Amino acid sequence: MDFKGPSTEDYGPIEAGGPPFHPLYGCSFPFRNVGAPSLRFLQGRVPPTPVRYVFMPAGLHRSYGAHHLHFITCSCYRRIPKLRTARSRDRFVSILEQTRQRYRFVVVGYVVMPEHFHLLVTEPEIGTPSTVMQVLKQRSAHALLPKKTRCDPRQQSLFTETLRQPFWQARFYDFNVWTSKKRIEKLRYMHRNPVKRGLVASPEQWRWSSYRFYWLNEPGRVRVNEGWGKISFAPRVA
Image (tube, rainbow, N blue to C red; front, side):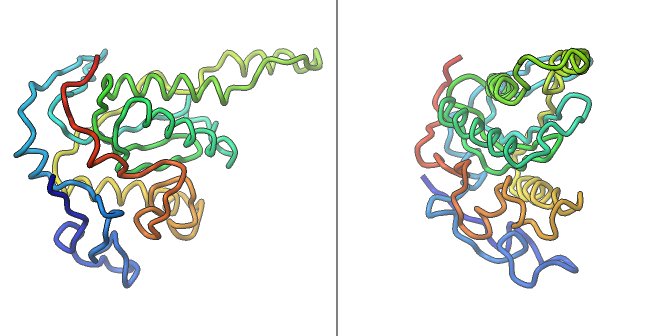
């Protein structure tokens, strides 16, 4: 298999106001000796697979089977910041890593925000991205929703209303990524999100994203780019 890490060609020139030397802004940087594959590898050496479209309500559809990356966005119910605490975000990324191992997909990038998350992932060997999202949402909701306990009768109605709320919005948004340019664009967008929102002063200060892997080569709780050399893209198990 031929792999290549990011290069100046991938990332382009340093942007005005950006850091003077940064792997996401125009310099070569190794991907832990395995690296993200070039899209020429994905397009040229993998046997063609029929693209499968999964149509959703109100015109939503999913396109699976072309070996594209998927940029996925999922929000908490009514954009309520249910992931506002460090503990809840830690729990979520642990469940994401467990799901990655179980369904065998590659996490190219991610960020977990207080009320939503973004993922840039390959299609899994087991199931589809929709399968992954269903499991991830169910398991994280079960782990993070408040458990029913005895409470003051004066607080009963408020507590019951909280229990009735879903944790996640019913839908998630999936954008197919098949070029290096778009892959880098999505990585930049995710990594800048916490800074843009004013949560931190610089991307490396936000522990719940893949930025520290790319910048510091720090493994993190979610294993980024793990499996490029091991996942075969063989016909997936439904």
